[in-house]
Image 1: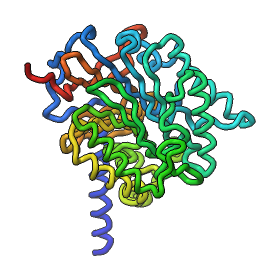
Image 2: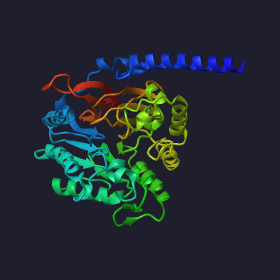
Image 3: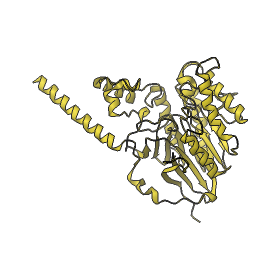
Length: 400
């Protein structure tokens, strides 16, 4: 009897896994739109000539090549030519893979520096604003000496662009810090890596503005949001608040069956029980970069408690290597982390849109007061403009 139960359980699991794999294979890498967004292609934003400001949101670009062979850099260049000087571009962390910018004696230094220089070369003639923020890879993947790495990267960006506010928050601090776009639009930058980083990290809002405890960060952010609740606020960070992807605990069937592929893609050793346990661990306990990791889970809970008090906040992050958009309790939450890598993202849930593909997001503010979200992906053919994968009006123009 016992063996029959085991056999039935095994067969049921095998059938379920096969069904899940076939379903995943059918829909994977295809864009997902929830029912409310299916008609997005019929939307028509104002013409480019009516733009007040355009903001590109680019996450996890750190595995980029040169402009000649990198389709995302080419798409960014096209966007810059389209929108002109009334624009800004925000890099959402993980700017250099795999460990940020090491010291010059490190054998990885030359390759890391070249990646960063390929990015910065885009802005030789650019008249808009460039802002970098840091992610876990920029802090040497969260290791204890990561502070030195992020300072080294910051110095290079600031010196190259000749702009002391080109890397925010300065000095590896927590933030929040602001950059004024115009009367309607405000950018706030926070350092979410601070909350999971090992080793030294400055307990400061900005250099020279110390916090007594890390808890003072939350009222500081709340005060900023309250003072600017009449504006549309873009809150930029590296770690997402909502995600249907890996750091939110979602795996592929292949990763479930072959968990060693997390270490090496060719390690196809079937360990379904270990895979199930690992999935449960990542979803409910979490590695130190997951949303479920206890320090980050606590931070996320407190942050969302503040954000849910307001409307018209657009929280955007990278970290997960895909494109996702959520609308939750009157605010907008986005993941724009696929500028150089892509990973699995599950369909449905709270997501309005998701896609496992390279790309980045753009917020367009128009003179009529409306604000639109665009998701741009590399073109099908070389030389063509980027592909529009999703469009949504976040703030309609006020009634006359």
